[in-house]
Amino acid sequence: MATITRRERTLIGVGVAGAVLVGAYLFVVEPMMNRNAELAQLVPAREATLERRRQLVAQRDRVAAEQAALAAQLDAASARLLPGATAPLAASELQKLVKDVAEGAKVEVRSERVLPPVDLPGLQEVPIEIAVAGSVRETVALLHMLEQTPRLLTLRDVNIRVVAVGQARDLLTTLTVSGYVMPGAPVKMEEKPAAPEPDAPPPSAPAPASPAPATPGKAEQDKG
Image (cartoon, rainbow, N blue to C red):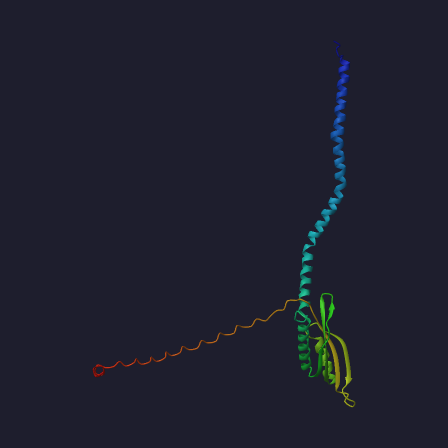
């Protein structure tokens, strides 16, 4: 049987060690290097994502404040709309408002009529036409008071003419006033107190008992 010399054993040991080193590099070192390279490429993207999230967290209070301010502005704007869930109800409220303003301006309302509503994005415009007669001062006061109403009103058309020749102080003004309503908005109903229950009628007095029929006496019985 042939024996392995010392030199051959050394060469075999060197070969086995080299094979182990090559295997360790191929199956351990190289995958770790590839993994580290991939992680190095992902780090900038993850850092950018983390920075964006930090900015969003930092802006949370500011966004919440802006939302609260926007909600307050929306509530304030909604409060200036005409009450009523439909155009006819809103037109009735607008007529009442304009007539009250005209009465405050001391002008005479000659005529009024409701015009067809106009659909707008998210709103509905409700116009009415009203003709009033009054002096120049009263007409100017009417226009000023319409602009100062708590409701959101716009003047679509104003036509002013003299009532009669020789009476330049008396003017006939035709106004087209528009209000706005949010279709389908809930209507706040005013609570009315409950009607008092009617008083119960007093108990009737008992009817007098009818007299019992008289029984015949003993004498009548003997007589019979």
